[in-house]
Structures are given as structure tokens and as C-alpha cells.
Amino acid sequence: MTCKILVTGGTGFIGSHTCLELIADGYQVLVLDNLSNSQESVLDALEQISGTRPEFIRGDIRDRILLDRIFQEHDIAAVIHFAGLKAVGQSVSQPLNYYDNNIAGTVILMQAMQQAGVRSLVFSSSATVYGDPQQLPIPEDHPLSATNPYGHTKLVLEEIMGNVYRSEPGWRIGLLRYFNPVGAHPSGLIGEAPQGVPNNLMPYVAQVASGQRAQVQVFGQDYDTPDGTGVRDYIHVVDLAQGHVAALRYLQENEPELLAVNLGTGRGYSVLEMIQAFARSSGRDIPYTIAPRRPGDIASCWADTRLAREKLNWTADKDIQEMCDDAWRWQSSQS
Image (cartoon, rainbow, N blue to C red; front, side, top):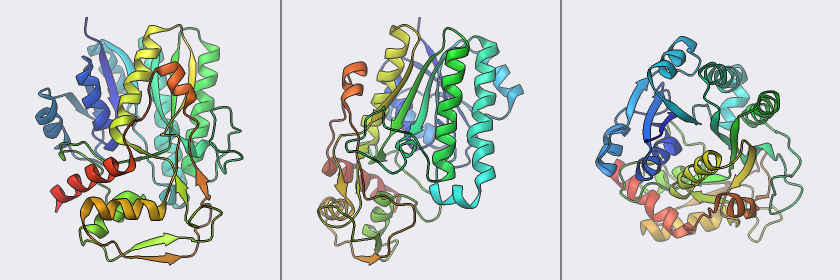
């Protein structure tokens, strides 16, 4: 029997790519999304790429009546939970929105799952739960802390899920700590579509390459890194999506477990390396200026990836050039 997976936030950047990988792996997909940061037209692209159009319900994870109806009307085997606000800067200026959407929404979702007897959950967490890294690469048993409200919502939700797991037998929960998702589907049909000024480096660089913005601001050139700019573990969104399917399969095939696992490449690239790689992909100069460091930014961050390899039999295999090539193909299709 085909498993049906509820994907919250499934029309978003990572969610949409994960829907494709689920379909490719033989799962049925039901998407729940309020479209606050995505477009319903993404479903057309998913159908064009995969030949299958995911079922779609427009709605909010805070709507308990809707959630109960979904679990009553559909035989859901597991939930992959992406629905959440994700901009660090915005979380500082609008903390209540973040606590309401991310924490309250997830609690309501888990209550509905509990009532329906659905105990398998793959959660979109973040490397922000490690705070300022005390060691590199960062292992899963690194001390946890948060430096902004967005990261704090992820940290609190990890704690909530741990408490639920310990209180009630049978829960299978994967806490997937992403590093820096970038790139786009190689078809060029889906990718990251930020509203307004991009919060993340690669979509900003892509908009400079396409002429939408004049130059990249590089925040800080005096970090203790090879070229003085911040170093991050960038992971191709297709690799990341495949990591979700690997985690789902692991949870379904093994005894109930609370599994926290890093999804990254295990190596870091600097801001300037990223700009240079994107210049190669686009064939265009990408002007940049050096600006002061931003408060709260850290020098370097990359993942220890051994646990994902051992437990999930998963590794990220796409390099920085492929990430930039695919992001540029997507960006070019948007112009």
C-alpha cells in the first residue's frame, strides 16, 4: 500500500523539492500550505517535472478544525513539517509572530497528530540551535543555544518534541538540523523565490548577477577565516530534500526513536568563494562592497556529517559549482 505523507509548507523552497523526492520514491503527497511565502503555481511545476500533481489544501497549521478533518479524511502515515517563518532579521523585529506561527502552530499540529494516532514526524530544524559554535565541524551533541528568536523557536520545538517522545510511547521523530540550503531543481522550474530583499546570500548574489540589484554587501572581512569573510556549509536543496526522504524511511523501518541529525556537506565556503563560483556560473561580474559585521553573525559554521551517513545512509554530493549553476538556471528563468 502506498504511504500518504502530509507535507506542511510543501509549496515552499525546501518543501517543494522534498515533494518531488517523495513522489520519485513512490509516496503519495498531500500538501498543506497557507501560501504566506509561496505560490500555488509551484504545484504546476511539480506536476510538469514529476508527472504527478500533489494533492493540495490551502490552510494554516494553527487551524485545528482543518487539521482534524485532514487526518479524518486521509490515511496519513507520517508528517514532514516545513511550515514556519524563517527570516532571522524579521524574527528579531516580529518575535510574537514567530512564536505564534512556529511554536503554537507546531503544538496544534502535534495535538492533531496525537489524536489521529499519527506518530511519525520529520521536523525542519536548523543549525541555528548550535548558537556560536564551540568546535568545528559541529556534531549533534554540541551544546544547544539560540542567538535570535527564529533560532529560539527551533530550539524550543526540539525540546517540546523530546518531551512528547519521552511521555508517550510510539513516536518516531526526526529533528533535521539544516545548514545553508541553496541551489534549485536542475530543471529550472522550481527554486527559491524570496519576497522583497533576500535574507540569504545566494539569492541576493543571483539578483546582482541578473542586474536586479547593484552589488552584494559583504558583512565583515576581518573574521578568523582564510579570506576574512564568513564561512558557511552550503547544501544543495536537492541533496537536502533527499535527506528528508532518507530520514522518513529510517523512521518507518526502525524502532521508535528521537533522532537529531545534521544535514550539511561537511565543508565550508566563504562569502567570497560563493561570489566567485556564482560569477563562473553566470559568466558575469558580481560587484561587492565590504560592510561592517552584523551583530550576531558568527565566523564559521559547518557540519559534522558522520551521523547522517551512518544512520540514514545519506550524504550530500553536489558541490558549490553545481549549486550555483542550478541557482543561476532558476534565476534566469525568472527574469
